[in-house]
Amino acid sequence: MTVANIIETTQYLTFKLDDEVFAVDISQVREVLDFTTVTKVPRTPDFMRGVINLRGNVVPVVDLKLKFDMPKTEKTVNTCIIITEVNVEGEKTVIGALSDSVQEVVDLDPENIEPAPKIGATLKTEFIKGMGKRNDRFVIILDIDSVFSEEELAIVEKAAGQRLSGEL
Image (cartoon, rainbow, N blue to C red; front, side, top):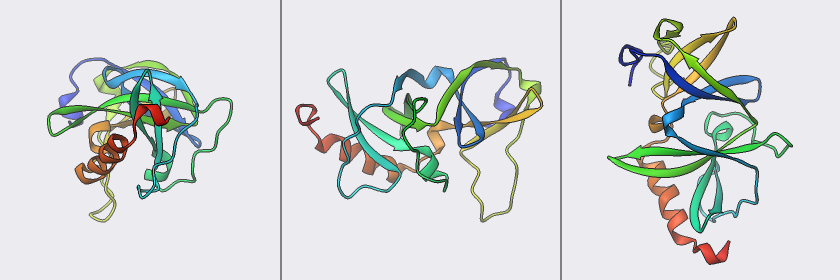
């Protein structure tokens, strides 16, 4: 989805990774959890921190900071897991995303959203839906469906499928 596709005011859940504010379309957010014990799954990418037991379901948890080449998310009183629904080849997959803190739900009008910056061919920004302007700051609006490649999500799904909820 591009900025041109955003034609009406949309609500976004904003959250922080280090000092940057990111946002994801609220329609793809199921809930926000306090940080809980994450069970590491062997032989998975570094950005996959492990899995959690969410009401009897195994949910993979990813560290967006590692995915974005930032330092690993450290547990604090504000650390949260944002439970999102990601579309993979037409099917919804539930993934938990670590964040340093959740801010608020905001309304962003289309006129306050700029296209993602074009920074040459080597820097990939296809996972950025746009740059929202709010209170003299930019909010990086993520296209959560494009943050991870299909191959990465297949690895995450396979790892989560290998864990039985009784083991957590």
